[in-house]
Length: 472
Image (cartoon, rainbow, N blue to C red; front, side):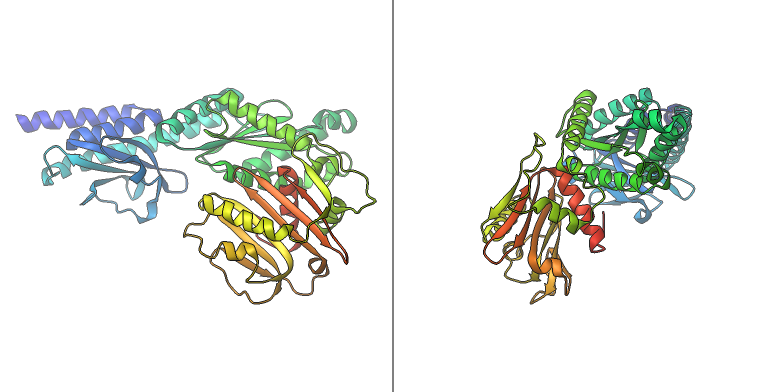
C-alpha cells in the first residue's frame, strides 16, 4: 500500500510540472519537487539557453551562492545522475538533449541512497519535457508579439520582459543591460527623401541589430526612430562593446550607406546596466537617454569625425598653436596645447596602478609610440599582474626588447612614419575612459587629452581599422 501511495504522489508531482507553462515559475517548481523527493536541504538548478550553455536559474537552502557557478558547458555534462562530495547531480533530459541540471545537497538522511534514484530519474524526465515545452511556448509567444512592420517586439512585451529580468537579476545577483538606439534624423530623411527611404533605413537598422543579438536578447520598437535592446546577463563593458559593434554594422549596411551620403542618419546609442545605473526600468531608460545626449554633444559629433581615418582624426584633434579653439561640448572636458615631455610616462604608471586596484575589471587599452620597450612604465607596472586580468592591452610600435608580456599584447609596426612622431594612449574602462594624443616636436610636445567616451570609442574603432586589430 505504501509503494502505491508513493507512486501516486510521484505521478502528481510529474503532472504538476508538465501543467506549468511559464518558464520562471516552472524553474522554481522543478527545484522544489526535486528537493522534496530527495529530502535535500539544499538545491540549485541550471537551465540550458539557446547555445546549450547552462545558466543558474534557481537555488535554495544551505548552498553558498558565491560557490555556485553562474554558467556551465552543457556539452560536458553526463546524461545520467551521479553523486560526489558536492551532492547529487541530476540532468534533466529529453532523449539526449540536455535541458537542465540540478544539484541537490545536505540530505536529511545524511545520504541520498539508491532507492531515490528511480523516482529522481522519473521526475527529471518529466522536468526535462516540461522545460522543453515551456521554451517552445515562449518562442511561439514571442512570434506573436512582434511588430509586423519592423519585426521588432512590441513595447509592452519589452517592458514585461524587462520587469521579469529585474526580478531575476535581484534574486540571483546578476547584471543585465538595456540599450537605446535612435535615428535622430529620421524625420528629415522622411521629409527630404521620402517615406519609403525613411522606412528602408528603419528596417535596415532593425535588421542589422536583430542579427547581432542572441536568442535570449530582446529588441523592441519604442517609436518610429527609437529602439530598445535588452541583453540579459551582460555587464556594462559588454554592453558598450555590443553598442560599438551594432553601430558599426549599421553604418556599413548597404541600404544605410546609400542614404548616408545624401543625408546623415544621426544614429545614436546609449547603454545602462542593472544595478549600477538604476534599479528599475525607468531609471535605466533615463540613464540610456542621458548617455545618448552625451554622445550627441561629443566632439565625435561636433567635429564630424565619423569619416576621417585614425591619423586624420589625430591631426584634427591635435591641431597646432594657431588652430581655433575646440568646440565646448558642455560635458567631459577636452584640452589641447603644450604638454610635459614626461606626461605620457606618468600617466602609464598611474594607469597601471589603477588597473591593479581591480584586476578583473574589463577594459580596452592601446598604447602607441616609436618602440615597444620593456621599460615602458605601463609594462613594468603590470609585470606582476594576477591571473584573470580583465583589461585587454595592446602596445604598438617598432620591435625593441619585448617579445611577450604576461597581460599585454605587443603589436609590432615597422617603418610607420606616424608612430615615429606621435604617441597615444587610449583607455576604455568599465567606469571611465581617457585618451592622450601627442606629437613630438623639436622643442616641445604638443598634446590633446580627453575623457569624452564617445570620442574615445570612435578613436579606438579607427585605430583597430588602421592596424587590422581585432575589433571586439
